[in-house]
Figure 1: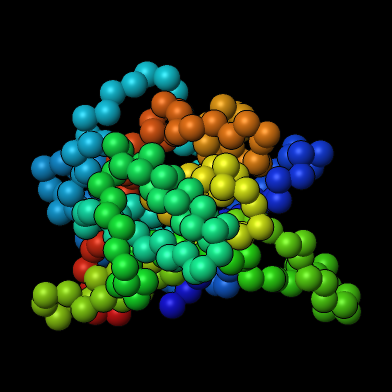
Figure 2: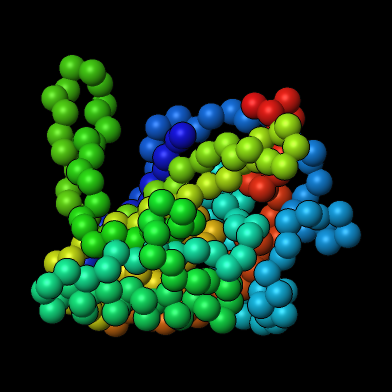
Amino acid sequence: MTSYFCDRLRPTFEHRRRGCRLKPWGKEPRFPVPPSRPNNCRSCNPIPFPPSLAQWRNDGGDYWDQLVTPEVGALVWSEFPIQVYVEPPGKQPSETAWTQAVLAAVQEWQPYLPLVVVDQSESADIAIWRRSPPLRLAPRPSPSVAPVIERVRSAETRYALYLQQGSGSASVLIHRCVIYLSPKQTAFYVRAAARHELGHALGIWGHSPQETDTMYFAQVRNPPTISQRDVNTLKRVYEQPTRLGWPLRNGN
Ligand SMILES: [Zn+2]
């Protein structure tokens, strides 16, 4: 299993222009190349293209060229509905507000990709937790420099790759996502952060340079809803080649 993460800076508005970073977490494994038919080959593609995205038509542009393409290809889901687990609330009213805000963000993506909320985190495709992202050590310029913990972040999305036994002897490469959302924000910003992080988990592995897109690289005072450019970008992601969902040769 290998993990990657994407995170945004905390919503300190004076820092919003500094942007948010997208880094590998660990070293991406090299998988053998499966049958290399692109994901946008409708006649030969075994990965279903979501009907809701297939029907989407808009000429408003996108920011697909800003995205990072992992070595495994586009981070697209191939089985629908995508199963989303949201950590249930405890006894505190703020916890109930957090969960409701996250569920509202899940609903916002529903028109574009089929999602279903499940109550088992273990089997979910995307698990969303009410906690601050784990602390990390900052990259060191040299081994002689003392390690420093990076600044605390309010939200983070990671994905991990797995090999799943397919129907035959070959294994299938799949991924799972984990989202951490801080419990220390108001419900308004929790919903905005959940909307943004879900965009990553659904396949938009990168950020928009425009403040009017929900995938803008920093939090803003008035977070936008999902824009046409966000959906255009999501659709382009699902048109890209991927190794996810394909049987691997030699089962490794
Ligand atoms: Zn982000």
